[in-house]
Length: 425
Ligand SMILES: *Cc1c(COP(=O)(O)O)cnc(C)c1O
Image (cartoon, rainbow, N blue to C red; front, side, top):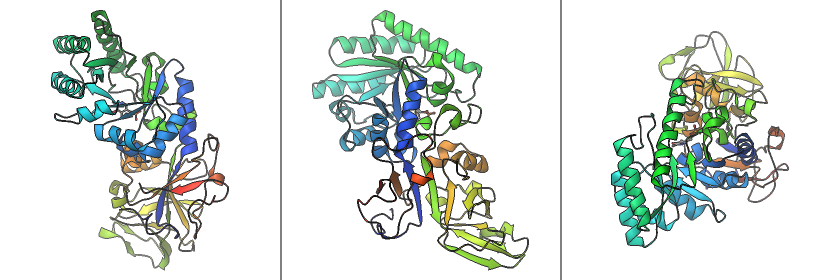
């Protein structure tokens, strides 16, 4: 459920503004950081909560030539709905037995194969469809998750894939792997994985594999390890302008700008006496006479309950802290006596350069990572796209071009000089 269908002309309870100009600029920045490699924008999980179709298009406009998803269904949806230019490659890697291999071949997806069961299913599908599959062989170089183990397993998989290739059933388009600890620069496993990756690639190439792309770098490795870029970098979180971890650096260090801003309309402001318990369990008690502001988003909207008592919100020009528990649909902040109007804007997080907290601040408050903060924002929160048109937006673009939602706004009008459109995501 979302509120776009019923509330097109009303001010919104809450919204996630998605700055597509910032997203395009982030992809350009990542291209500049990895000059020898192509960029894959990872748009799994509805583009980390930002909206897969608009973000995929904007990433391509910014220069990404590949898109990556986890599930085949995500990749098939993009191919069907995103209207991408010819030649944009889409890769998906999280397959389970009986998956939609035929549909994937017909949709010209690149599919990942980590083991013999998958190779058998994809070659059966290719035979049935009468078209070769684009197959990327995945090596487990130490993550201990998906991927083919080095040694006998890799030998068997590579040799079987080469036989299927010579039978015309597939093209081996890629050799790839994934890093375990790239968000901890200097972690010894990074070098060890790179050494093993080179060995596993070398074995495949000696046997005759001629892959278009070899790749292992996620966002943190793209930002910190140019020796891991190979032919393609698979960037997710950096595309959305968020640093993978504080150890890697801040997003600004890399010229990246957060794409999502989460805003809500204060639902109620009221004065209460001292000693007043606030929200379920009364884990916050007002220290004296004060004003409380009701923020109408809760854990059903993806606000972490673990941020009870800690999450930061910009309201009335100051940072406030979640007072007491985050409930399903709402939480409260102590406004310290400030008399704000209901309807005042509350910014939970945004780009951070105009005084508001960031998704990384929320991650710290909730004891998690910023990936989870943006990805969990629920479907009840409408995504509002700004700077959709190529040429607008980019680094340094501040909220002055981010439009307020004007009551009575309808359809295609340009709001305050910037294009804005509500989406049903
Ligand atoms: C999610 C994912 C990525 C992107 O990771 P980021 O840290 O967000 O850049 C890259 N590769 C694989 C296999 C993934 O699952």
